[in-house]
Each structure stands twice: as C-alpha cells, then as structure tokens.
Length: 339
Image (cartoon, rainbow, N blue to C red; front, side, top):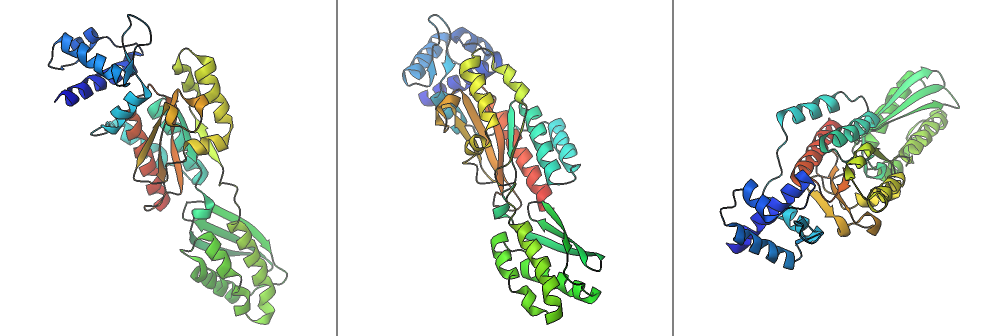
C-alpha cells in the first residue's frame, strides 16, 4: 500500500514537472492531485522517494524534480500509454497514405513525429541487407536496351537502364522475366544474388551474353548499400524548448544530429516492431547526451524490423504521449511498406 502511494506521488511529480517545467512542492501536489492523504503524508513520501534516489531537490527550499531513476520507474510502471486523439490518428493516416515512394514515406514520417511529439524525430532508412525481393520487372526499350526495375520488401525501387551486347527476342525477354522472378522473389538480397549467377547458363548460347549483362546489372542493384547508414532528422527547432543550459544540453544535441552514426547508435536497441524502447539520460551510449532521452521502436512489414524510428528529447518529456506517437507512426509506416 505504501509503495503504491509513493508511486502515485512520483507519478504526480513527473506529470507536474513535465507540464510546468518547475520543481514540484508538496502543497502543489495536494492541491492538484486527488492523492487521498494529508500534506504531511505526502511530505513523508517525498522524503522517502528522495532518499531512494527517485527525486531530487535542485535548490534549497525549492520543490523536487524527478531523477533519471525516477523517470525509469515511472516509465516501467506505466500501465498504458496515452491513447492518441482521433485528430492525431487522422493526421497520421492522411499524411502517410499520400506518400509516393520510400523516400517520401521516410520524410513524411520524420515531419509527422516531430509535429506530434514536439521533439527531434529520427527515422532510419530501411536496411537494404535485410530486404527481400518483391518483384523484378524487365521492360524492352529498344532492341538492345532494357529497363530493369527491382522492387524490395522495404518499398524501395531500384531502376537501371541496361545496354545489351546483343538483342533479345520478345519471347526471350518474357522468359527471362519469368525465370528472374522465380529465382529471387521472397529471397534476401545476398541469397538472391547467389541464385542469379547460374541463370545465364539456362539460356541458349546466343542469348547468354545479353542475359549475363542484365543479371550483372541486377546483382549490382541488389548490392547498392547507399541506404544502410542513412537517417532523416526533423524538428530540430524543437530544441529551443529545452530552455536554459545551451552548452550542456542543446549544443551536444546539435552536434549529435550532424553525425548519422551517433543517431543510429541512439536508435540501436530498437530492433523489434512490437516493442517501444525508452533510454533515459545516463542509460544512453553518450555521456554528452545525459540530459536527453530516446524513445524508439522498429518498423517494417511483418514481425521483423527493417529499421528504427524514434525521438530524441529532454528527459523532462511526456513519456506516455511520446511512446504512443512513436508506436503509432511505426505501425502506419509498417502497414504502408507491407502494401
């Protein structure tokens, strides 16, 4: 019973501090929250929470603020994340369903996350090496020129114009398209590349050279790793809400946003599309960012996450609302990629 009451006091302190950005006193807690106990009991609970390291007093005679440990307990004991409003759900659906390709999906997602959470949003491009092949299309342009289109499970589309050393008959092009798709659909890129190597040998001697040229171009498209280390960032203007402490709060964040490797490491643990991970303050990989928290999750079609998205912001954030927004955007993006 005492533990439940102390948790209720901690929850009230976190909510008030996030809302007001001011240290919270016992009188304010009693006035604003229906805690069902006397001010003296609240003061005793606050003293116990402070002794256990969940809250701290930034100045003498001031109220209390949560510590990283306090935020951690608050997040771990969340019974439910704050549901998104109908307007927020409509905004997500409307914005994301208008996307025309993978780049557009990523850019829209990062803008949307920044708007919903009023934090800095980070979206990793899907990792090519984890993709599978959805479809290969071969379109004749001239007798010796073909358009090759590779469509991946991530929604990424690669196009190549291939110059052939000799012309392919229409029947050979149709046969090649069928054999290509039979060999690679549903395969991971590394496995698909291996299967393609033997394909020219299946054709008549006169067709092998043009088929080999097309296969070489397709293998090159599959090994293009441009997106593996790419991230999109949005909402940096929201850093102005950090308030005081530019040198130890905002400046390190701005520097981190310049380094994609740093951002990928911040998102690093978010490998599941069914779980939202929260790293608070000193739990993160960089001590310079000890005043920030990261809320992230994986996204991708099916259960396996192809990449991660999330937000970076001050430890003093609305964790339930932020977790709900991150989870909702990830689910919408996953659904779009699945389609």
